[in-house]
Length: 403
Figure (cartoon, rainbow, N blue to C red):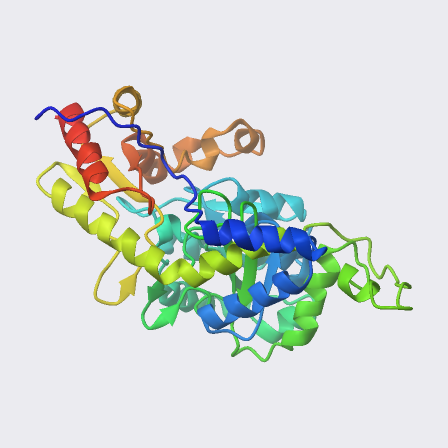
């Protein structure tokens, strides 16, 4: 390998410009820093970007998924299916609402769940499926809906919202996928409900934050559903803080002993600027992915394909799999990359390998494909502050270490 000057390459720092900082300062000086006009404007802009009627901003994608399950009436006695190959939030929200977690293995050599096994996992207790748009690439929602419709006779609705669907609800964990597209649909238009993350490491950040959107073709009363999210996210309080500040309008009711997971205007002020910059950020991510793809094409490395004829991911993570190596060897590679200043990661350690999920009765031996995906996976740095030269530095060191 040619001699390259040492560089420090972080894994996924936030891309914050002076514009975001100035907007936060404006929010602080406005006297309104919790949920207020900026949050409402951010919701409006997200809905416009996705192409739906409404968006709800909350403090995380996790809260977005959990509140959606609660509003759907999913709870004890119900089952919810998700992938064994994901971050804990996809499954922990199922536990939070008291439903049974059902994990499905990935397909061989795939980061997506095995759809044939998804079909077999559906029972008359299944109320929702949480597919995971890992790395920013949307799942095969057409196949998911085909499977759901083929099992429609098993479905038993427990309330009016479930009756509106009259089938299993698709709730996408799209924490990685804001801005992705597939088969002519934006992420947020395919699943019944779609939850995004705006965490610090995500493509678009509000430091901490998330949002939920829903399809417009199911006959949902958008305003009523939006108000339910507001109620559930702010203690079940009949008026939000903004409404309470109107003169003579202090009084409110508590309609339900609910939760506290609203987004603040400080966070939304960051998001408003990030969203205005977002198309350019997506373009830069695509350029970096194309550089990685071209540099790594000659190696014995499998990569997640972010762009194809009918789809385009958000380019959130650059996932690689190094053929023929063990879990131990993979960890050694990550350590050696760190020694030359390059922070790498693994996405993901399958859920059945964690203590919490083992304690729930899950066994990694039941998920061999997910385990095989994990043992040789290395995620390379991918963020919009990477220069072309830094991408080359990553690749040259990666090549040297794995060959």
